[in-house]
Length: 394
Image (cartoon, rainbow, N blue to C red):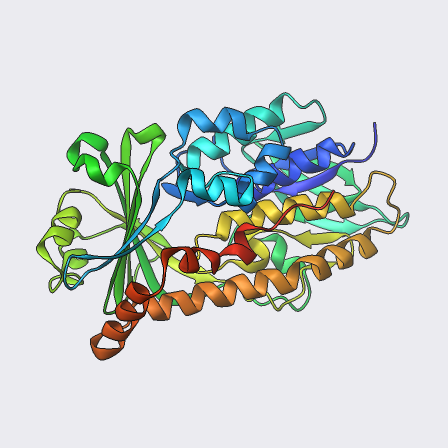
């Protein structure tokens, strides 16, 4: 048995990397701190660039029964409650890019990846475990001290991939990489049974724009549930980075919105909130035999719906550049960073710009809405081609 590639984190990026590396002949050890893969978070949008990789990994078919392929994105004005424009998705986007656009529950995607990894043969997943220390050995490998329960094991590894999220501990071992910072924005999330909302809302993704706030909603769990995400600027005063939300505080951000949109926000009795934190993609992604992937390297605002997709893309590129026969791991990781950084920085910048556009108010908002109305929907859709049209290296 070869020395394993150790991956910290059994989230979407970590499991995607495990599958991609395993398919390339590597032995992989995934170390996950959580005792079980709980249903953390809620909805997730998977554009064709991500679905294409998931198909290569043998995951897409098992995910499809749990997903929804929305017919389009309906963009509306939170102030007037009226639709501005609809961007077609569904069969049209699948035909254009050769892969679907899906909305799913994050836990359904994670389970599909996890189940596939369990049956691949080269992947060992250890839940309830964490990496305590990492050090170089004289022969050029890594020594990882992994605690599982009360037992600490020393594992010699070829490399360590930090896919442990925005608050990555592995990132602390990458010299020169800045830590995550709060962006000043909070995401409020809730899910409802589908029967609690108008059936017309279950066919598409909804995006409502307003001054200093916006709302996204779409069906998940094969249409059985309805996911809502409201995003607002506010100070974060909680001790942690997620918390139970105060419903009235949330509604206060939307008091001037149109009744039909506000009524959606009033439906859930319980909301959770997350501080939106970012990691500057400009920092180094690797240090020796240690590399970062996904949010650990470049956590971004969700306003391009590409956070998970970028992690999935990272996994495909890293595996392509990391053949089993590789001996210069440092060179592999430098090539991986060079191949990914420009695109990820552009997506990160696009997400930030979208946030500013979504939250315009007054005359600027009127101008934004007018431009969207006058622009043909196919032209609006084409603006995403550089994101959706990405294909994994072969």
